[in-house]
Length: 259
Image 1 (cartoon, helix red, strand yellow):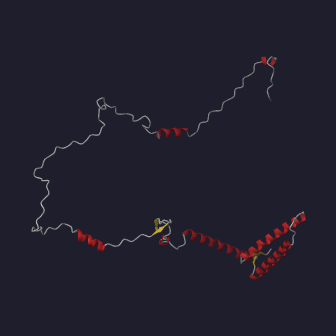
Image 2 (cartoon, rainbow, N blue to C red):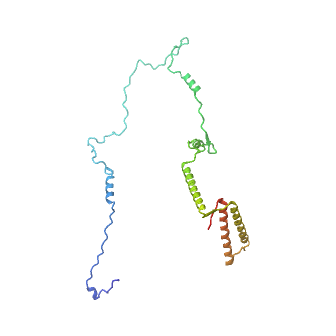
Image 3 (cartoon, one colour):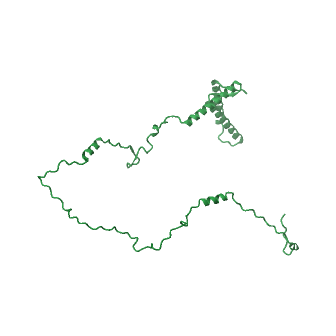
């Protein structure tokens, strides 16, 4: 019931009223608060913002000196005059002088180079393909055009998951066949022969042709309710016959109940 409002100079306002204090709901505290606080304290990195705890205080003697950061040149060594070494070239040998014989080097570079070139196998050119009109080439092996998959060990074999799926499908088909045989033994189901199936199929097609002939004879304009209902009825009957014909053409073995 809503409170009655009195004018300010009313007698009823002289009666003191009890103050209604609304109880404040307790503040929500998460049960994971303690774990969060512990994780925050444990994961807190030391020396993250304020630097190391005990920093080395620089001594007043190591102050910055003048020209201390400029690059210094290496100290030059004193020149040593070698009187025994002459800078002059030797004289040109005379025509009658004979060269010194019998001196051989450790390695005959001419023979070794010749033998290496003779015994070397010619480098096989890697197959490439051009992917632009200007002849920009790429390696054919990395293009995906080389059939590397035929070199796999399990190439041409049926995967394990497909074998498992085929086994499950075969097992389900065997269970269904056994169930059908049991039902046929009990006389609950009967298998249609091929001749009966063909006769039923021909009858369904004949009925569809008759309905189709009636459908072709309908007027183009369906301006009345009777014409509209007749067209819908023929549509539904033709669709039902089409589904039945599809079932009889798709499945060769058909079972029907004796009831």
